[in-house]
Length: 237
Image 1 (tube, rainbow, N blue to C red):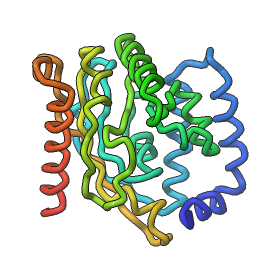
Image 2 (image 1 turned 120 degrees about the horizontal axis):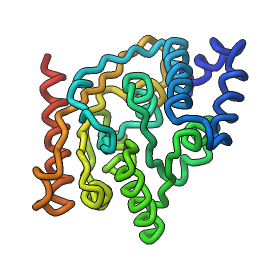
Image 3 (image 1 turned 180 degrees about the horizontal axis):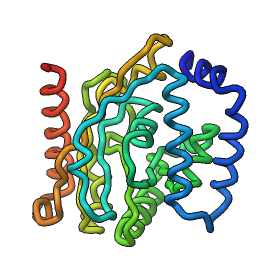
């Protein structure tokens, strides 16, 4: 929270313009997604700089050449999506929990990018969201979903990955891109405004031919294992 306040204060002269334009984009269905994403990316970089957050990232070359894939990262906090918005040049939407849907600015960013809100307590609604994501991915849109379902609150330790979150990938037969977030909990969940570095590792994707004979829970276990291994290796360096 302290860092969010610092971001707002250091951008007070231009923050209203940023928020207004993003709000306009959230209401404008005709504006190209690439245009919306480029502006949101610009605002994200400004916010990160104002918040004294540096992002180290590796592995962008691992992303599939064609759009229509799903990011599956570990979940550490509200800051997670901002790491992707700054580092990824490929527009994407995301799936967020219903409770976070009405957080100011996050709601407008989500609407602008065509993101979806999921109710973890409503199985039928959850499946509708997963199916909607799958249909969008089939049409060439990229998505991000957190397979843990909620942030771990254990730093760089992961919770179990839920197999249900991978049903969208199986239905779309799309590439699964495991992503490892490291120290992403520090910007917003630690009471400090000291400079901080967050790391994002884009790992090699799993293509449909690799996982087509696996159950969704087997896929979840494999993706979690790859992310845990990447985090452990990075922390050793």
